[in-house]
Every structure is written in structure tokens, then in C-alpha cells.
Image 1 (cartoon, rainbow, N blue to C red):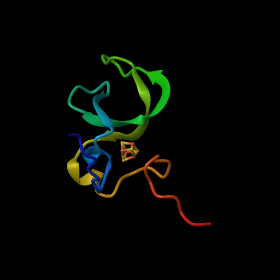
Image 2: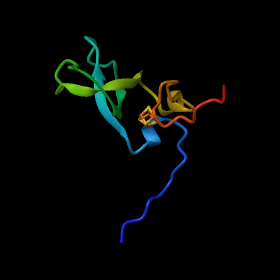
Image 3: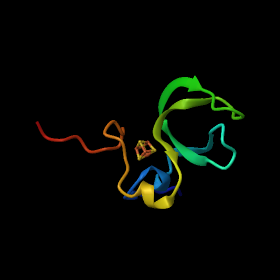
Amino acid sequence: MPVTVTTVVDNCSECPHHHATTAMTPDPWDRGTDYWCKLTPDTPRREPGQAAVPYKLALGFIERASELKGRIPEWCPLRPKEPK
Ligand code: SF4
């Protein structure tokens, strides 16, 4: 029988709804990772040498894991709404 598991994540890379692609630059030694939100459809964007990604870019060009800490965009659809 399936169950629902709720997980708290610190950043998009830990979220089960992210899609990661390699982010390239003209410098072959300079590359990072783009994290896209699969819960947020967007006009497909194609990075050089990559398949088009039909999601909204959540975190762009992350080069080191230390850059991810606490990084979740304000528009995250799973972010609890602030009371008004
Ligand atoms: S924006 Fe929110 S739902 Fe989307 S990948 Fe990041 S944490 Fe997950």
C-alpha cells in the first residue's frame, strides 16, 4: 500500500521535484549545475548542448555544494504561505 512521506529540504538539490542539468560556458573548464523546478512549467529553454528543459529555473549555475545551503526561491510552490 502506498504511503505519503513528508520531507523537509534545505535547498532545491535535496527536493524530489528538482531536475538538474549541466550548465556550460564558452570556457570548457567553467561549468556548473542548473536546478529546475519540475512543479513549475515554463517556456522550454535549451542550454548549449542540452535538451530543452520545460521547467522554471530555480537555481542557476551552481559550482559548489556550499552555494546551495538554504537556497530555495521565494516563488517555490511548496513554500508555506506567509500570514498576511
Ligand atoms: S522550487 Fe521548491 S518545489 Fe521546486 S525544486 Fe525547489 S524546493 Fe522543490
